[in-house]
Amino acid sequence: MTELDALDEATKSYFETKAAQEAAQQAVAKAAVAALRAGYRPTDVVARSPFTAAYIRRLARDAGIEPAPRGPKPSKED
Image (tube, rainbow, N blue to C red):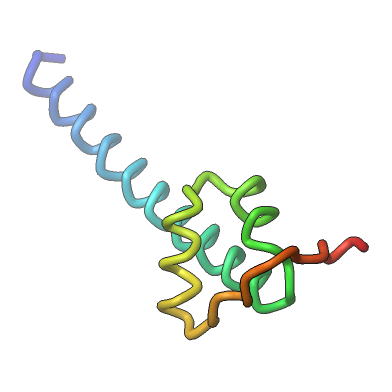
């Protein structure tokens, strides 16, 4: 195997894993939105996902989920 063959293999692997990572990211985003719609707190969703709070807020807004009113929020487990 030449260096270019090795590069071809590495490039193929890169694109395969990139596609898998993008699919996994979409699945996590869908599950995060579902959790928010089910009434779970964004704080709990952030804690269980690889996303930042800002990204979770963006996903929520893009999905039409309104922000909760200001003030203390009960947890879903309460």
